[in-house]
Length: 142
Image 1 (cartoon, rainbow, N blue to C red):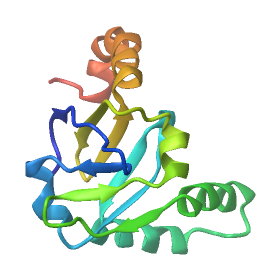
Image 2 (tube, rainbow, N blue to C red):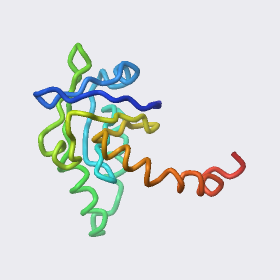
Image 3 (cartoon, one colour):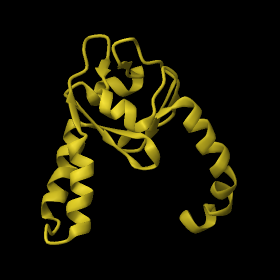
Image 4 (cartoon, one colour):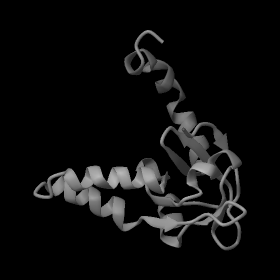
């Protein structure tokens, strides 16, 4: 399970050093792809394979399904972290998410989200009140 927020930097070669807590589950491979809200999703390879299997069960006669799978899979990058826990984020994914050197890497349960730090902070500012307002709807009785 991935939890927490970390603020690493991209190096000059477009590499991210994974937070130490995230390295072991991603040691066998990581798949980075486009996410919603202009962030990137990073999955351990095993989790990505589970998602891919579910996608293959989806009807390809549905244009919406085909469109989603194309966008999700066409930007995917398969990486193996090096000994320092670094993975390369491809230029097309860096451009998609508008990544600068300053990042926010957040644990989101079964995946990790990679955000430009300024975009993440703006997202939090915009959604903080909604977070409070919908808590009862999302998690009744909490």
